[in-house]
Amino acid sequence: MKFFEKPNSDLADRVPPGQTLAKGFPVLTYGPTPEVTQDEWQLALSGLVTAKTLSWEDLMSLPQHQFTADFHCVTTWSKLDVTWTGVRVTDLLATVDVDPQAAHVMAHCYGGYTTNVAMADFARPENFLAHTLAGQPLPADHGGPLRLVIPHLYAWKSAKWLSGLEFSAEPVLGFWERNGYHERGEPWAEERYSDR
Ligand SMILES: Nc1nc2c(c(=O)[nH]1)N[C@H]1C(S)=C(S)[C@@H](COP(=O)(O)O)O[C@H]1N2
Ligand SMILES: [Mo]
Image 1 (cartoon, protein in one colour):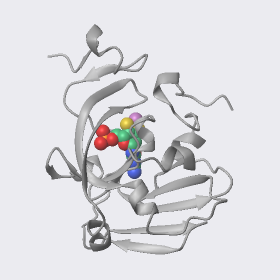
Image 2: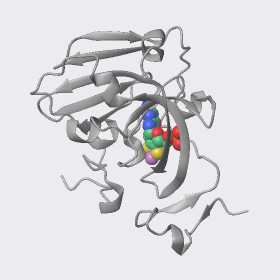
Image 3: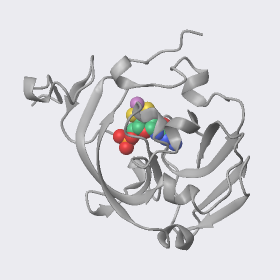
């Protein structure tokens, strides 16, 4: 069995350049998988925003939606039509006052991983915080109890085990961005590596 396959031509407009389709859903983690229960999970909002810490209950009290999204890892595998359940980033943001100066967001994770996104890439209705994958509680290796999903950027921006969102006026680089990945990471433009 092959683990990756070249996309059929009818899927060509769904699969960005240089990507092949993965069978199954590979796990890609730098370092060990943090063990975090729903009870101990918290999400801290900090920086240029109303400081606030959300519990699991707070998160579940926000509107819940189903999402179908394509997933593109910069290491060249993609997975189409992944189905998730969770909370829209825009619904979360509507519960707080974000300072108009906030132009960048750092996602912080249990285990220490970080990744940065511009506010314009973050505050989109198609981005979400996922707690369910294909109808099942999000497995720990895929980022459970909660991960960020930003479908229009390479998946290293989709922070697993999300623990915090820090808003700033100036960009700050996250883990892979400091280590040579592109600051934005748009797959159709193949923004894989930094030119810094
Ligand atoms: N906290 C954390 N989030 C992370 C990563 C990681 O190592 N740690 N890897 C990123 C990368 S490179 C990818 S491709 C996706 C992989 O998600 P998956 O393991 O659910 O396929 O998670 C992203 N989010
Ligand atoms: Mo990745």
